[in-house]
Image (cartoon, rainbow, N blue to C red):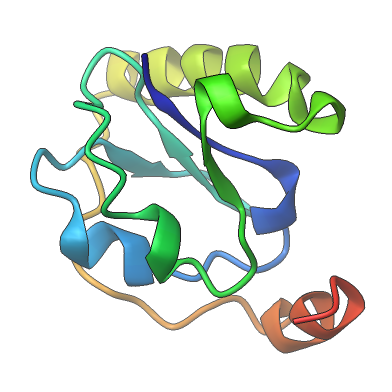
Length: 106
């Protein structure tokens, strides 16, 4: 089992989650973060840290985010193939983050 970053992260890219990840399984892409399912140890530490509730355990994922399972896996493989390291330090969120957070009702 793994955890999945959903499309709620798009245009946010809050990085609170990476600070609590014990295995550094988060990777950064253009408009969001993703989790490498092969590296995630299913500890759930990241879930409570996300201010837009973008992270779910795969077996608790709402149906509307099902496509994000394959998206995380394929994007993680792509960035790793490109030699990009995991994100391990907190960064500023995207400039659109607060607007997206408000739109999501948080």
